[in-house]
Length: 302
Image 1 (cartoon, rainbow, N blue to C red):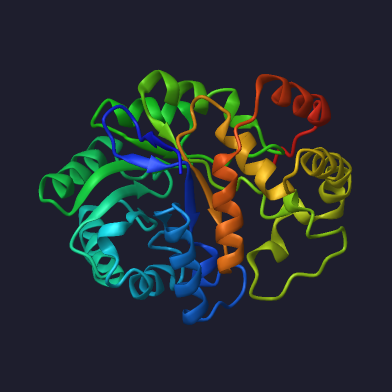
Image 2 (spheres, rainbow, N blue to C red; image 1 turned 60 degrees about the vertical axis):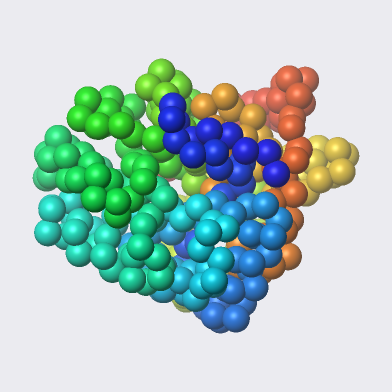
């Protein structure tokens, strides 16, 4: 699989990153055996970059089972989901290391900004963890352009995780240009718009009670119905080019010059392999122009 450098001096990572939120039960229960099979399929397909978080339910602990005996084959990224105090950060890192069954984290990220904690102190504490060998590279998630600039004043940031997909292009206005300027590698989350772009769901679909999407605004009729008009055209365009809507959504995200790797979730080995295959599809300038014509001005703004 194609790889790209994460940030100015970060590691080489595959262009597809396995998002582990679904594997922790965020979109319904997944058995340990299924998680292990899915992770192994992703690794074997070349997508050995795996993203999880302190706040992803059981994700870290079940990933620890999946990568047992294969730690040297994977690039593990996790996130600090709780507060940014030194006390919590220290315990969170130790808990992540224990759950994942490793003595270091390849990439440690702030899950979101915490205005109550001075970013200067937060970055200083992160660099202490790096200097101690607990983590190797540092990143942020869900930061605005200005928040990236402020954090970068106090330490090296290798990666940024914004929400970004064909139906939500707001990051193109500020976040992606800022990351390009600062030399921060972008690893977008939600490239499939919570599976809206796969064509799997239709308006009126009822999600299970343990699936986070049951309360997502994107699936309310006033957003979902007009979005599906666009999605159906995108699915047709993808099919005409020999690919699925899922693979189009991934390839489109990877076409942006700021993007290093696309974080995409999977719950089965088949999904993991299918997602990984999208890493080999490079959209041309004319492809992107045709897709832009389909998207027009439509965006989900919430």
